[in-house]
Image 1 (cartoon, one colour):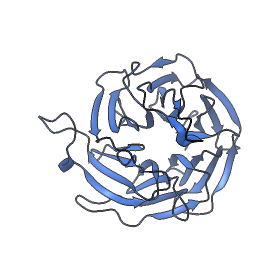
Image 2: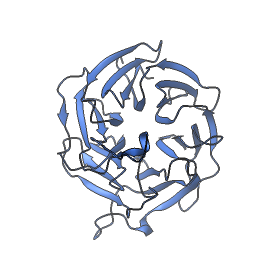
Image 3: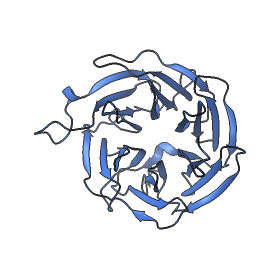
Image 4: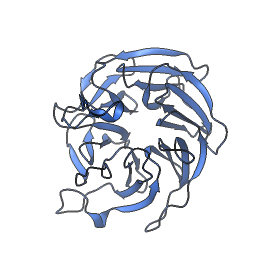
Amino acid sequence: MFDVLLALGIRTGEILQVSVDDGVVEPLYADSPSRFPDGIVVDGREIYWTTMGRPTRRPDIPGEAGLDYSAPNGGIHAIKYDGTECRDVTTQGAITTGKQLAYDGAGGLYFGDREGFRVSRVGTDGSGLTDLVVNPRDDEGLGECIGVAVDTDSRHLYWTQKGPAKGGRGRIFRAGLDIPPGQTAFTRTDIELLWDQLPEPIDLEIVGDYLYWTDRGAPPNGNTLNRAPVPGPGERGTSPQILGGGFAEAIGLAVDSAIGMAYVSDLGGRIWRVPAAGGDPTVLADLHTPISGIAGLVLHR
């Protein structure tokens, strides 16, 4: 059972600690507000998070869509649970746009690199940076990789490619954890397409026999929390169950299987509680700043 949620302030650069009992928010770490943090995970010793890096602004496009993150200045960083001893896991220029992050329980971090059009793996000590999925670049963002999840029991990697904003062309894929001998990355024959024509899938997590994911696409199926049974080998995914909706651009996801509760963060600055089997979302905390990734943390047991 989680004691707190760790939440990333995408504009402020902060890592915030949110009590799951009463929603009280406390600052844990203040990073540079210009690095734009996105994904966060813990491994029992440290907290890891990705940054998208410093964007440039396209003057002809207003709002978020006008931010260009194509410069390779994203990264992965780490701190202790008490917010001390910050270090860079990756070197400058190794990542284009770090997105959601997963840990495999054996020293490996997996992450989406949106403008890098890839999913990669690196050791928690910074060693062994490996590109697992490398997609061709396209103008619509169909090959941009965002969320990642790792199933260590079946040794599979899952990831989302959200497609264009509110485009209804999002997809979820699966591949093994190990690149076949003689290859530098997975090929098309190594990859299974599980779901397509989704609104805009973002973060995802495997809990038991279910895959959960957030979606920031257009209503009624977008801006939702979804789940569906994990497909068997060679099978396509079934229609997802919408567990809750009405979020303000749903991003982060943390599922506490011990109590059957899912937590969703959104760019409206709120963290929501949603019963993991479905039900009405309730607000745990309003942080008054856009929140990207979240992760559950056990402190006292």
